[in-house]
Length: 620
Image 1 (cartoon, one colour):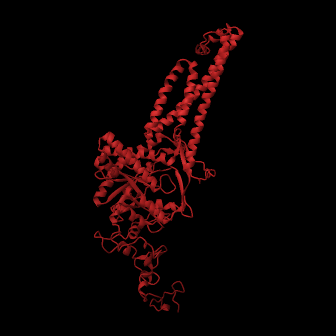
Image 2 (cartoon, rainbow, N blue to C red):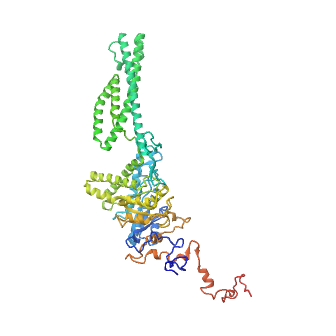
Image 3 (cartoon, rainbow, N blue to C red):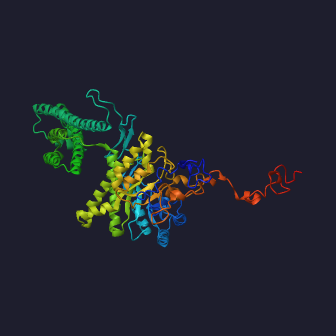
């Protein structure tokens, strides 16, 4: 037998560590001879069944498997609220008793406040209260340390930007979601085409810019049209007023007549006038009312557009634009006050509105419709920053770590760039609040922000970008982008198509390369094997794949980090125990023994009266 054939299940009667289903299983990840990579069993943990409120019992059972790190589950807020407060304290006592470590998975809530009906600020506040409640309760799991608590970056938010990889390896954005901040409504940007006139390829970002510019131009035009129509009516009034003066009506107080027209005395007044004067008076009052409708409408529209531009200038800290708007405001407000006192000043207000429209038109169009991803990051970061501040305010040095997880690819804020931007925005807002409200120095505030806000990187979730045409190398590159921010790791395997959660090594997740990218920054991160696919009797009977995970990572059995390794001993019973049951059951040996003496006589044994041919009658 050739040396290279030793250990192969096809030749060796007792293959030792070979895995019954696949003799090559674990070879990509199992590097037990490389002590620099082999992950300590103490850094690898498992999650408990998230479907039960009896987390105390669930944790106890998982600890019985030998796992040192357990992730307590609070995925559903309704289930979390059913966990008695004493249970978390008992879990903490159990942790200390066995010397284990705990992490916590918080409830799946939408931190942006965006729902099916659009964005609602009260829903964002509600999500913040839910997240804070879970942080406050989970603190009992580790009241003296910094418990890692995982929250998803989104839950229900659609993917703001659909990115795919073409066959020639080019990444494109096929469409983007946009939101109108004024109404909170969002939807997909209607997909345009290439600009053949200017010879530009289709780009959703250019389409969005074009949409905002067109929308802004249309709104400015509508306001200007109302002002112009009001001005035209007022010019017609001037002609009527000249006719009235020629007819002997001197010093006409049009505003007084207009106000009188809204009283009971109006009919009595005009009945006293001669027919010509009566008609001219009625025409003047009617036209002033008509003009007021247009002028007032144009002013209202102008004020709304002014506020939009001003809000953008304030948020972007554009002092140059803000100064121009302040100057415009100082000119228009006195005219508005005069108009309120005397409606005959409508001419001046119409002219002021037209002039104001020209000033607004000279500025860049504000983003009425903005990318949903930008908006979502702004709102979600507000939620996480506020929760981090409450946590720091109450717990200080034992504040839990807010670790934001990437949801399965295809959901909102699931890519590395999205998560990186969300963490940075959350940290920035947290720092600003620590400086303003807690009096911390900028250096200390930044230190706390980096310590208490980071990411949980789910290897299986990001692998699902493969269904959009991405490769194994692309998955690894995503991990490299987020690696400096990672506080916690979730392990699961799949084939890049569906959200399956298999133990590592049973799918095509490039685990080794991803872990190596992350551990360039921190080699002591906890890794939780999330294997939801194994929960329930219909799948793998509630099995805990702790052994499979240790084998995949080539973890050493002993704390000295030396041989033997789990990759060499995990499946020492491999060939005898497969998915088809026991090949040599105990009943066989009870009947026939381990040798030949108990076989029937026709087979050379010594057991007379036992035959293969009949129901126990000797075959004479």
